[in-house]
Image (tube, rainbow, N blue to C red; front, side):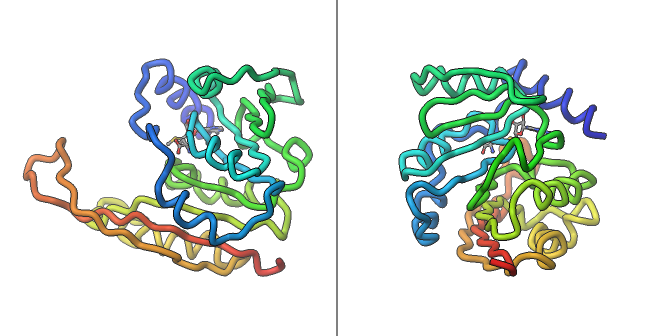
Length: 223
Ligand SMILES: C[S@@+](CC[C@H](N)C(=O)[O-])C[C@H]1O[C@@H](n2cnc3c(N)ncnc32)[C@H](O)[C@@H]1O
């Protein structure tokens, strides 16, 4: 249920349980985004954006950045921590916070319409699809297809734990799931894989486990 998930995410931000937040710009974004060769004024949608510094980086490339984020705590923190003074106004069910090329619609992604968002060239997804529980991912992708255009491409970063095998979708793997969710409408190009051996500090056995950081470029079949 979306309602229950939303309550949990809002609680995360209230309790400062935001381990997913990266204190620096994502290195795979900085390294592989330029290969897209997007024009400076291109409009980039960042679903489930949190207070990601990647939005600052994207705006610095000359893009118009439009994020959507449920938690007003996250949105306020994003602008305050980057010393920006945004304007704020109501747009339908959302509060639009805006500063120069950076806009964040504060509200529920699943209530967002194509009209709220406007034309989008590329979606930047880092820890959005994969942050959602498996039963919501199909709905997330179906909704994404409704609110962006047929020509909109997706730049997707994932973190895939090679040892995970507890649930049916994890047995199949995130890569298979991405294929199932997107291949009908997109050509899927795995642009980069970075394998890192990491010890999970919460794990009993203290053995290093392989984590793969992947860069996917999804190009629309009708583009
Ligand atoms: C794992 S975090 C990732 C944030 C960001 N992409 C990053 O890289 O730091 C997921 C974010 O999605 C937000 N979120 C979850 N469900 C949402 C929804 N239905 N609508 C809008 N935002 C949502 C959460 O509040 C959280 O900030």
